[in-house]
Amino acid sequence: MVCVWSESGKQNLSDLEHVSSEGCVLFLSQMDLDDVSPVSEGNPVLASGSIEHLHRAGLALDLSDEKKEDLVIESPVCAPNDPVAWYKFDGNANDSAGIAHGQLRGGPTYALGVYDQAISFDGYRDSVQITATDNLFSNIRTGITITFWQYGKTSTHYRDTLCCSNYIVGLNHPALAINIGCWKEPGEYNWDCGQRGSCGDRLTGKHRNNSEWSGRWNHWAFTKDALAGKMQVFLNGELFDSRTEAYLPISEITSFEIGSGWYGGYDGLIDDFRIYDYALSHPEIAYIATNGTGIINKSWTASADLQSNGRHSVVTCMHQKFVLKHIRSEQCIILLSQLGLDQISQAPEANAVLIATSPELLRRASLVLDIIDTKEDYVIENMGPASAVRTLPSNSQIATALGDIRIGTFADPPQLGAQTQGIIDIQADVILAIIPARYRVQLLDLLTRTTADTMFT
Image 1: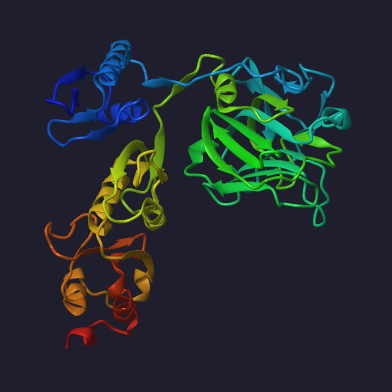
Image 2: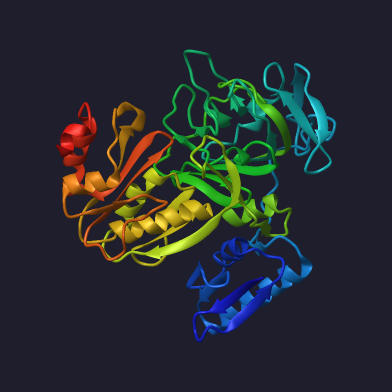
């Protein structure tokens, strides 16, 4: 059982029989509460906020628990304008919104999709070549949105181009291209949208885990507003990434294909592929992703190597807000980026960060913040491979050599109350050091000596 308590007087809001504490924290973090956090005593969750918001949260939790359903949150929705091209892939590649019908290349097949059927690509020969491209893109100059459902497969070539405009290999990049899961797993995503031959307006990043593009259905939306200079990517109805200063107009598109392109073929299923001639808003994209309901499933999972053995376990993703006392939120985000968290961002409150990741990584982040959120400058740094050090000294030996510091590991943290604390841990043969900046040069010197024995003679 999970007990949800309000911070004021520890009033019990809800006793949950079917919902985990991790799922409860994730669900409540999406509501208008001041703070939500797990508590170690008896597996409860502590929530703080106004009486009205706490009451609503309790009712919503009771309803989800009674139905034994996944916790969901309702997102504002707004019906978009009609798309200029719409490929439902229900046994054919026809354009349901116009005349830009698709012609099959290779041997794409059809399989069960999100809505009726979906088209299946083999990652090599298969694609859909769009006809009447000049007419389709004639009025698309300053704004565009491309949305689709996809279910990718893990492939050996790591080249997954969902759609692409005309290009010349080795000479001109395409003006328009979408890639997900490309190169090395879990891969990268690229949203190119501008002018042919230029990658100037590109939004790119690293996938957090494979499930964002393989092994399950995901809804993606890619937008560009050239007048505002904004490009955005949405995953399953929520903002995933964005950039500014993207002012290049959309031009020189003379051909367009789905399922293949600049980075090679896409291996998997695509359903409900749409093109709009303007940049859709978040509520409009949520409308498409949820089929107008606004209900977004919040039972997310994240992949993490918790045992440092190269094997990934699926764990519940949790959110927690941390209010900082001494270091700035921008500095905190830079430092914690070394920990492999799924997501860290600035919270709406002044000088606070919001972290979304697995329970174990969230515990580590909390531990690190307890150490580095002081008036002293800290570094979090990869000090090199442990296997390169002939005799790696113990943390107690390192602390003795550095002086006036307590050093622990993630499994055995430094003693609470120590004036100066640090962590030195080995993660997949990498020596990760979290220490005051004044000790950095000394530690590097210790670790780069031929043997550690001479340090202590």
